[in-house]
Image (tube, rainbow, N blue to C red; front, top):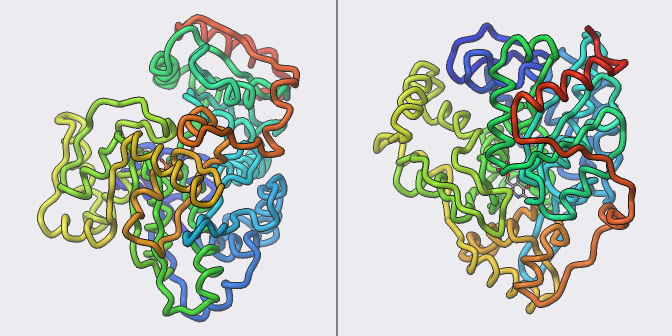
Length: 466
Ligand SMILES: *Cc1c(COP(=O)(O)O)cnc(C)c1O
């Protein structure tokens, strides 16, 4: 399978190169040249498979001959070996509702499903190419710890994660700073998340520095992440349908960057019998406004109780736009160029009808989020995280929709406490964090200071290939 850019400006590359490229060099996002489809027979046969075997079936046609079959299987087994539930993404019935629990990975949030796999994949591809990768990223919480967990101890990867000093929760901080593998560096910058992000952007735009130190990003745009996330849609469908191809299922998906819900859209295009995709946002509702009005317009970012969805621009939106604009890369490039200037993008009436066939959307505010958390707890004694609550609230009129539970509630116990008066017990992976030794560096929110730190660290790192 070859990969092309949503903006049409690159020569087709194979799966391995697409993974290592991350973002297409013309500024677009990588997508497969065509989307493989599944037959009714395949759906039936896959319904009873364990998660890892199903993942191999789904991924194989996307990977093509980039990786030998036994490597695909082996990397998938490794990626999910650290999950603490044998089903990896089990369904859990709560009252009348089916929840798809996506938080049984090492950092107790759904990003583990993609990043554990991406870590294994990078490790393998870098070894094949005899090359190295130095990941630099800024985090306001969840992504940093999941990215660190995905690559810690990997010989050909170093990771530097910047976070705003004193502005993330103690659990989130400990999840990063207690990883003391030598290839992991956590840096608390004396500033805000925006400062940290600005520093990362500045260093990436220093092309000489970026090339010399083989800097790469960790973000939600890598195609391999999307691919891993389609698996649990198939998995959940198989469990509730028993493999009956006429059985249609709806999903409610809390999303910010359009990553999780795009994976559901991809599953549907592959032929999974999905009835509705319910796109749920918090107050940062650029995506909901788009589905409801056909206007994609950037606004301010608000802090909410579901911080992993506090975003302004949805990084995976461009992939959906590509399909909405009939796979016309020139039209995508024009639309995005306009958006970059005017901060808004408007689709025509025909396209709007298509959007409304593809998604139902709902924005959920903090008080509705808390009420949902409380209602579930009062009715069933089960704790949900605020992101999951956003999805459940959006699905209120769709009792049969499967709701994606994206984080363990104990990661967001402040909100759980407000909603229920109780705190959720910590999962095994988060126990003892407060007593473990930590390693971290506090530095000024200054790009030159951070550049110097990276340079010194990497110049002194044995596995850095200069
Ligand atoms: C990242 C995240 C989301 C949203 O994921 P998208 O990639 O924006 O769809 C939802 N819930 C949690 C807990 C997350 O960490």
